Image (cartoon, rainbow, N blue to C red; front, side, top):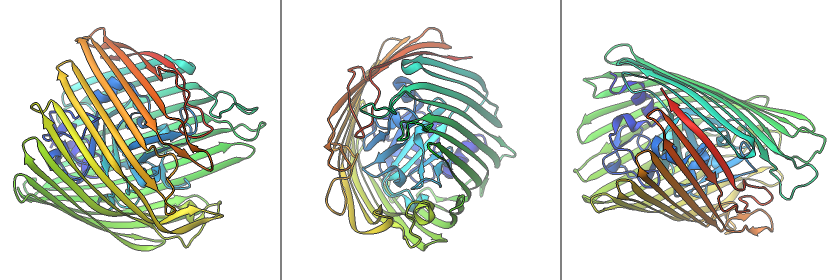
Length: 605
């Protein structure tokens, strides 16, 4: 069963690791190419050319060439994704997809929902997600509640950590140092036989940082950050048709920030512990697969200011997924999950959901998908969600795609019962999402172009006045995403992405911290086999902030990296960020890094 192994099993329960299923890697700046396999879109292996939803894939090669340290750093280079942060590394952040806040996107790491139930809104704390052990990221856009339940209103992000190929044993280490007294180091071990595999990784990140607040006041000083992350996963084929697997991950971080109390510590500790165990069964001549898994996430945040405040949340989830290939033209997936979320001292909730999806191929060129899901929430009752997608291959190089779905975001436990203006009468926010696009290839696939129009309507928005309240009216986010990837020569490639986002509330005023225009252009060049040069330029404009601030200044960021492969096992590199030394803000009153230079090495043996 090693061909599908624990990877294919966990894919279907929320992890996307189609690297095992694809011989061609996909460029991060583009929509997926036509001959690759993607799992996130339908929770089962699907040819990328038959996916109707908008998807993006980031490969290990993309991440290596770019040199980003945090997941959120890299994702902002994809069309439709923006990011804001209250200062430097480790500070409170929000990653927005298609103009929607962080808590409208479901984030999975090796199939585990990493969102924090004790947050004001249930959201993933991506400011703590390092990249050193990441092998692949898949992004699915649009309302996906029919497949993934609540919170998946703007989309889903799947982050997959590294594993070994069968018959290999590998040790890997990285070390980097640079500006702001930053040190980033990791060690990983991977091994696999034909029946079992194991991967273990440890990462340590430290920076003295810089003052988050601007202008600097009496409480401003260097705001440092430390992060220690440990991850492990593995699997074993018990029989030819039964596979067992596990995933474990811990993050322990400490962050300093500029507070309002000059005598306070103004620090935060963040700990998150998560684990998952599961089994995958293949039967009916492998036409049917069943995956069962159980996962747990425990998150604790402790703030040290004038007082010490502790926020603790945990989640337990049981998941069952079945996929049945009835014929070559018809596949059906169905399953259910039970989830318990708890916010210590403030309450808990339970959600039970079941879904069914049909994948239909009326012809070689046309793929249809229909999904339906019913969720029952212990606090507000039952909600139904659905999704339909279409992919049509017009010619060998031209494909049209579209998707339509509705979604919901359940009120968080903090919004219902927390310490700041809770309202136990809140109902779910609801949404309708539509997108349509075209993927076009030129010059025998060397030039790939994609264009997408998206539109999201959100009703019954939960907002803060003097407490959390349901707001009548519609919020709207609409716009266009363009991307291109050009393999000019075997050793030279370009990529580009542009996003226009018009996001407004019920009062028709633009939503804050959402760029109106976001442009990203990159190039990778290998003048000789041993040397790789990468440059990336971003232009962002039209960010509005709270109050009477109005639009923040436009800015241009230039990052570059040069890597020299000294031997087959040792690579040296140097990289620079904000090479133009731009003085810019993504949030009014919070500083961002200036010109920064880092140098490091990677070794494998």
